Length: 115
Image: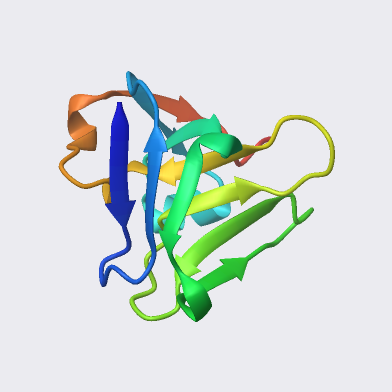
């Protein structure tokens, strides 16, 4: 199914193809602060439709993940695996997907704090 989403102000917009059956709630230092419910998808299935200078990037720790955010409204709609080699993934903040109620999905708690 094709899903579309954006940040709050709409300056960062995206779409992706996936069959959503669940969501991941990560307790790492950044995900717990964002309150994100995530789904992992192959990076090739993410299309960023609008961003320009409005898309910011935050990395920390080993810099393996690029946490993307809107420079205008501050919302974090997705993150990208930026490690070299292997198949890259994108992690969609399901709270940013239009028409989707993440509370209807089964939630898997991931211990990112210990990973």
